[in-house]
Length: 363
Figure 1 (tube, one colour):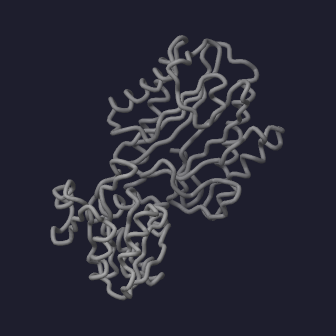
Figure 2 (cartoon, one colour):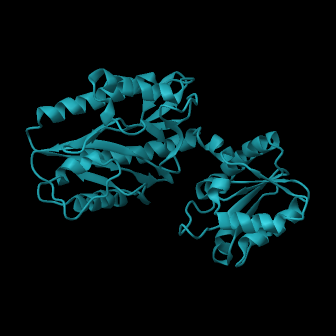
Figure 3 (cartoon, helix red, strand yellow):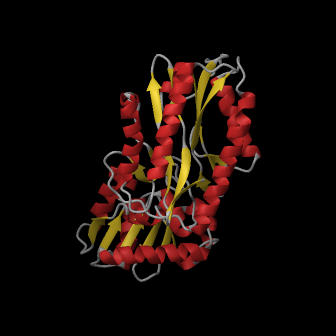
């Protein structure tokens, strides 16, 4: 991320902060921190943070981290606005904020902090005239619309995923385990420039394909004349891809496989045709579900139609039956209908789709 790009994003965030009367916003979600500053996309452990960011209404923003990341922070940030905290981060951050914005409103990402952090943070602010305000979703309102550089990066990531899918049938060999195929996929991504998987690969053979978030097993071996569902993604140039294909191993796919695959792909085509600016997300979901209802198999479609993707695999907007958010140009969503039958297996087919000014484009 360029410094100029991050500065522009923080300026747009400041406009949202002004609307809510927030003088300082404590950013704790790792992807939001990176989006706004270029500092550390990941937290190393679920119970350990690489740091936080304070976005100030006056433009004098701060990176907050511990001593392990001091040199990394100084490479990105003015040293005088790098704050190093010790063992009691909530109390020390609260003390800093009390000095920066006395008597003002401090926003924080409630969904990105633990209860323990919040309780100590709020206790340290008690007695001051500062006010705490939940500010979840402010950064996400910016992230949901991808700019030209983000779209380019996501196209690169998606292109590698597509190349992998075209290569993959050569390793879907009877006798190999689901786990071995999963490792082949990860090696392909790594050998072709990806920094990591976007998420743990799903390789489900036979009835296991009916489990939407199945983890591949070393004990399940691929069999000839059977199906395998593969849902995978990589991270390339910091951005995620996410695609699903369902393959037939062998030369004679059954009528049930062909009929189910066609039903899923037609539901996807109808959903993609429905994607235009201004269309509520729920209407795209209904386009796919309506096709399954027409065929009498809607009960086998057990999840939402898709989700936004970007720095994280799962972002807004969600394409489900309840979300009335209108689609906007620059959103990138997955469209991944599926039909699942526990005794037989499942078929899912997934594309990444960019909402454009006059419709959409499959990446």
